[in-house]
Image 1: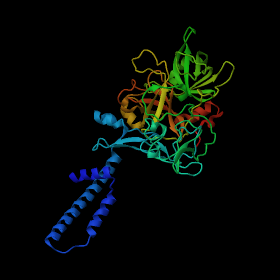
Image 2: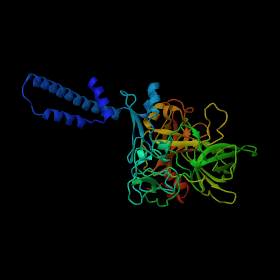
Image 3: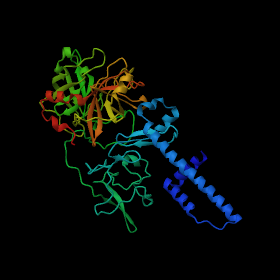
Image 4: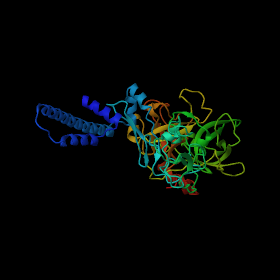
Length: 489
């Protein structure tokens, strides 16, 4: 154990590797023998002792490497986090993984943790998009690996000592959010015209634009109009620019004198809203009773950027059922028209969300977003007055079924919950979007459907799985413009 400790100390503090230790061992062994005197004999004994010690150290280091590799493969899964001790939970908070990365921690070494990145991403926090060939807008969210300027000059690393006194470097408090790190990849932390980097010419250090092409214009579905956030957060207030596809559905009261908030929805086409079937009473369905507002940040306030629509058609899935409380086929479509007969107009606060491809399959623990005006707690009397958003992680169907033993979780549904069960969708979020980032676009993968309580331990939110209903959606929209709202491949 002493040798293991020494190896860890040496390898971590001084940068020695297994191969370097072996090279040292080989060098000592290859030294020629000297004359046999008492002093030489003593030297030989010392050398033999050193050789044996190095053999043990090399063997121990190899065993340690194997042990860590085995533990890495089998250790951490998201759903086991709730079973860890409080100290482990606290330590785990420091493991920030972007782009669907999975945080793992080693039970034998509680302070060791790192991110396992999905294909195409790298970096300590999976923040680097190795396959990003171009930038959009001004490139503020560019996280690619180009590291030369327009003159083909090599960029300085953001942690270079030459940048200590510069405005942007690796030591900034929000360096990770801005994409700055121990690398020399081009970034745009100051909202310049395009990604740039620092280069050194003689004694002069200057910022220069990088040799990166701008992405070709593509359909704007799933594109936020505000700057992308690279922070890992729980439930928080969200501006409508960050969720420009969210729709708020209102229903007139019986006396027809006042509108009350009913459900959320998603704008999947300028004329169509996708929402949950359980928001409506199929036996007394009158489209004229409902209105839809897009671009709304607060329920108790009206903004000049909002767009309001009447509803001229509602389609509830013919297989919708909630006889056992499991809300199968919980999906509905609403066709909207303004008073002048127009559909939604794209603005900074109103945009369509991309629909997934039918073969899109997201892995377990993939991080997605859910947003809406739902209650903060199940026992609250009132809905949230402001739009809120939170991050949740996908849970396998088999694991979700174990959590809901007495209810059916079938392939038409998907489940998601927040880490440590602290965030979730709740009453009032019904019909709202569960969106996941695919190829730098937000894609609608779920519709808020049902669950037991809100953010309860081992009671994840259950969502309608949108990929199961693409033919149904297209048939009722008559295929008009539908295919243009798939995310580009």
